Image 1 (tube, rainbow, N blue to C red):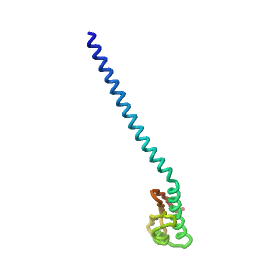
Image 2 (cartoon, rainbow, N blue to C red):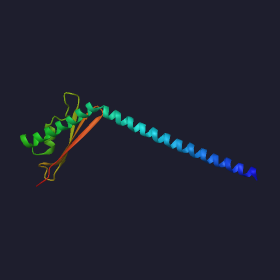
Image 3 (tube, rainbow, N blue to C red):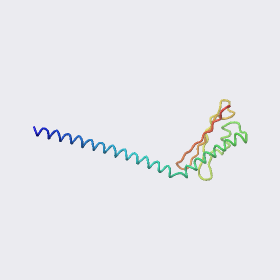
Image 4 (cartoon, one colour):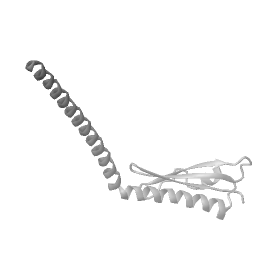
Length: 132
């Protein structure tokens, strides 16, 4: 009778040990993944200068399009895009690209997106024109 109880207790200990090992492995893997994600965020936040240059390049694209559309009077979106320097390269190494969404009459764009690039940073700005 005593022998049977001892065997049962040993099995209970094995189950508890396996539970602790499995929970430990889960906690270790979650901690590793969290550390990896934090390292990505730290790397991204450390590259603030590139992010600033990319957003200013996108802003330069917006300013160029607005100037071409409202000051120069270029009617179509594609013509204004072409007047903005084609490749959009800036002197600091950043550049911008403009994507134009024309309207049905092709006289004035519905919207355009200016995307600035510098290094691994990419920032975009969208301008929408709404009839009032």
